[in-house]
Image (cartoon, rainbow, N blue to C red):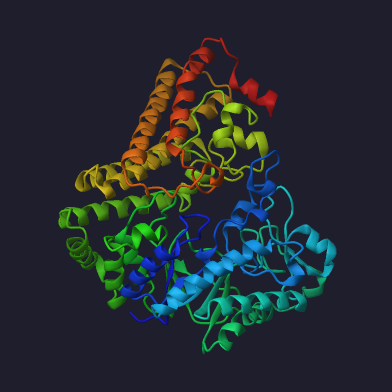
Length: 583
């Protein structure tokens, strides 16, 4: 299987554990042995860019969660701030990021590897920049259903803006001469081009409305590529793509005019927030890339998955050497790799378990490829199941409220199944969907339980799959609870059997919390990427007190256990009355 570039994308520091130089070197050494030619340097960004967040990223009234996305994505001006932008962007932060990139680029060069740079462009600028420079204002690039205020990206048809990007691109290439591949998301996460596909609809200034899109993109990509060409890279590649492929494996759909060859982004299961390996999936997805010019392999949590005792390096190397051909071939490769790097497991049982995990992963992807983002960004896993949901400003909600992606206020907060503005997630938008999805989850759970038995519940991988099972159980319980809760909100009469079922679901979730607490406290420290401090916890990362938050969830559920009984006997008012009063 021949590719011009074999790129390891290890995820941004904003979503994962920040790699120290030594950790980056360890990852890069293994990647080189596997056959990768490039490693993403965007992970050099030390932390999410707080200057793009409301109140510097500390929750407050009218907090705009939309920019949590933008803050997580690297961009050129987060590594170098041209003089004209210094009144608006933090120069010192960019200097630290650029120095971190330089250190890691030197590591890559010492290993004979090249650099790639993943991010999102053109990202919105602070409004004051457009007040001072009206001609800079380009397209509105936020998402009206998920943002509180409007955000605008700079217009890349303005020569002045292209010159600023040229300065930054030159600085990055100087810091990382090994850089020869640029990959920028656009049209999402606070980044967008004028008159392109945007959530707010096609828009931009009249100045550039009639500029052909291919010309707009190719001109901008050349600005980003020229510094790399100057440093001896004969065929540098700088592309923009419209849709992010990180949720699934897919060909990269480049924006019109983006130069270079074809690109396939390969990844196995979506592994946030829990980290586990799916070697069946990664082999199948790499096989799909056969015939493409370039491949990106997305392996987040590289300290777990690109370690010497991990299964991924062995199986990926085999896939780069020859295209995997069918189930029997894949099973043989995994069994061989397991015998080499996982001697503590029976290789045949290990292989069987990996196929069960892959089958489970495929099933939850059918529910939604972004399923576990709800576990994190809606704090489904830590918020209690309560009959009477407290108001947003209630003190007992603070430990999870402060991180729930919510720009629609009290109404969204009161809907436990709300997912970034509505129930668009497809598996629970109606009671019927919720019941069907809950049954689907049960089948997923059964496969994971069989895998755990094969691996051993207290083995390292066993703990990881137990964490995955806990997330699926939580979603199943959430669907069942919400379906019943929706009936209460409509004022329907409840029977004794309904009350029993409600209690069973709540008890099952209590037990599920206990299981996850045990995994967190007895299993490997890196089952979940946790923020290093409580202050660093954010929408897309749990805090170091994750287990204590689960205990608080249990405590609140037990304290309010009688609420359903009180509702049924008339001791407390109908939920429908409370909903209409408060909302």
